Image (cartoon, rainbow, N blue to C red):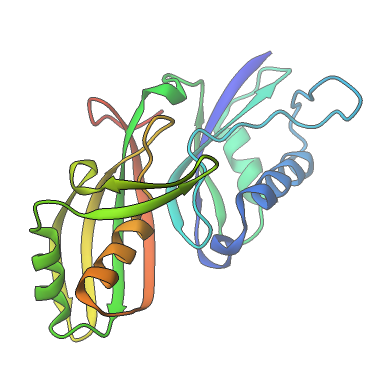
Length: 216
């Protein structure tokens, strides 16, 4: 039995598939692909699947990892091809290989973000917001609501704007210990600048380890 990690993209209408539904979609996809996958044991056997860093609903992902197990050897490129052919629109396997890193190695994630706001001079307002000494936000968890300072958890670059549209690149802490959802940053901006986020697009382009190497 061999563990396989695919990197896949989730775009278009597929961004509206929740994580729980994505697990069901991927199980159906692997069955349709006819891969010799391993099923869990017990009363309700199902295909073994793990996602190292689940993607938030509505976000695009360009290189998302998913692990499963094969009972028989087969070429990795064939496995990726068959998954793509069986997957719904918006999901495409980019590569397949044996895992190199552990989910605990994940430390950062890169994003390309664009948003429309009704702030006066949105780009300048966002740059002013980024320049604050601290950026407070409330993060909800199973333990309740916790106040956190987002400032040490991210870096933003390539801030550009045109009219009400602002675009920027974001590198944010990610992983099991600390995981910054970009939505928290945009919510804090809207609150502090007294404006509304009318529309947003978030694309996760890479997941990285502590040395800023791609998670593979």
